[in-house]
Image 1: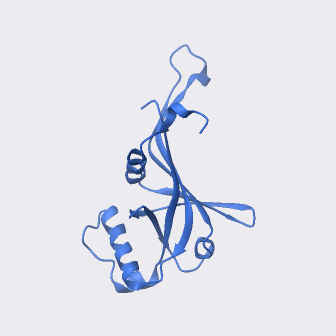
Image 2: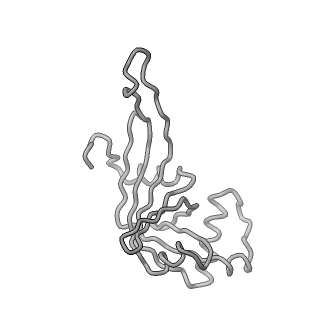
Length: 155
């Protein structure tokens, strides 16, 4: 990281950014062509979990075990340039994180149900279950985090 003073040194602080982010941008590469999509996610045991349809571009790429880059923003606020300053004197207050890893399809039905529960907890459904039919119709992928870096400015 070029601006070392902005790096978050403690891994627990970076995971806090991940937990506070409401969604992540999942970036993948297919034959040298970038593909990025905002997705909902869940966390557990040092892993990220994503879900989606069993077919489609995202499903095809993730099921191949491609390398992933995941971007999280927990807070961001544009600070306008002060009165009388050049317009380019604006700044950004933010906390963000970037994780990398490889995707792995979750094939075990019990594990898929457990991960579905993580999504329900994270997004406010509490102890409610998605139900077997919904879990069966949904594909889940685990991304084991290889690296996690956090950055902040003006916080």
